[in-house]
Amino acid sequence: MFDNLSGRLQDVARSITGKGRLTESNIKDTMRQVRLALLEADVALPVVKTFTERVRERALGEEVSRSLTPGQALVKIIHTELVAVLGETTLPLDLKAQPPVVIMLAGLQGAGKTTTAAKLARRLIEVERKSVMLVSVDVHRPAAILQLQTLAGEVGALHAASDPGEKPVQIVSRALDEARRSHADVLIVDTAGRLHVDESMMQEIVAVHEAAQPHETLFVVDSMAGQDAVNAATAFDSSLPLTGVILTKADGDAKGGVALSVREVTGKSIRFLGVGEKTDALEVFHPDRMASRILGMGDVLSLVEEIEGKVEQEKAEKLARKLKKGKGFDLGDLKDQLEQMMNMGGLGAMLEKLPLPGNVNPAALKNGANEQQLRRQIAVINSMTPKERRFPKIINGSRKKRIALGAGLQIQDVNRLLKQHGQMEKMMKKMSRGGMKKMLRGLPGGGMPPGLR
Image 1 (tube, rainbow, N blue to C red):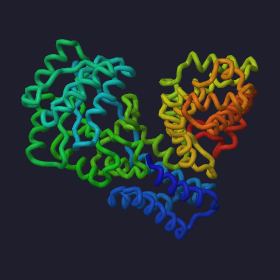
Image 2 (cartoon, rainbow, N blue to C red):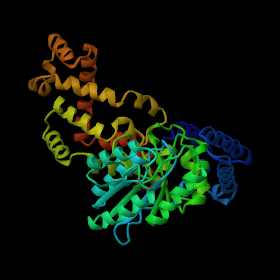
Image 3 (tube, rainbow, N blue to C red):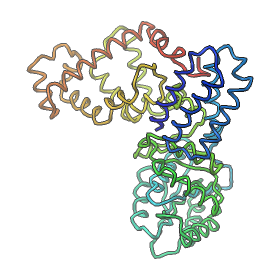
Image 4 (tube, rainbow, N blue to C red):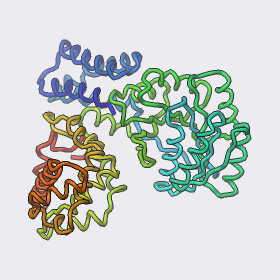
């Protein structure tokens, strides 16, 4: 997400960081570049105008003129204003109410409400330790009811049955009773999607809202829908007392204009980002961290939290002990690393959160680090004998041929993996000898974003 905008704004930041003095002329030129970058990212025009005007006013004021590094001061202003547009602070779900706390999801058809309901349930179960029940009141799409029932079983949530012949209000009333009897902490209501905002469907969802009396009413929006998403959010907000927004398909949106527009236009905070199809692909939205990512400063805090939640600590500690003793990093260790990387959405997802040097192209790195590539590498290692994994140097031409045949790949794929392993082994040796500090020093600002240095 934000790939295009991030690239453009990083270019702007680099062009002004080295300047010892900022004038009205070069501030005007910088704002023109920022305006173009935002418009190309599909940010709503009123938001673009407000944002650039606020940055220009602060840049022309004493804030920059008194700074010893005016260029960096201007980047800081852009960062601060991005945080303001994205919502200032992270707003968690309010679950402090008499159980069952009702969370209702609303939005257009195809936005991903049903999948988001399951993702949210999984997060509440695993992170918040809550008992969750799911119910669908989408009587217009019977497949949605079956889909939610299947997903509920997958994530370990309770499911309240519903029938296409029933009225949505009857379904939600019965689900509330069932949630109370089952002692569920949270009831998530998945409502019917609609192709556009029409009167009859809006009346239906308003009636469901009155019956459910939800504590949280979240608008689920497809981040790739552009200005239509912002218009839909505005229309829903006029009919329902929305409390927040969930952006879906954020991993497929290179522009990111919806995220910058929907909060400013509706005034509702973005709560979560859907970053993949799997039920664990839901991230808490942090405005300050997202602003840092957009400007190429990385998001190390989110990466650390993700690693803590998804990396198997026992395996990580075992590898650390092994390296400390001076033992080699073998192909079995590499397989463990690849599998854990896949759990975290692949190397591309991790690269988005790391501060990278200006001469490194993150898009090029991501293209070479997709899930299919990781699966191929794991298949190659699976075709090896335990001895070959432990001692890669014994893999000669005939062994490479057998391994490639077993994995259904080419000998070049085996060679590529062995080369990658060799590079990683060297890096692991450096890290075990305290080389991590040297590696981080090579990154901009010492490799760490503001607040973590």
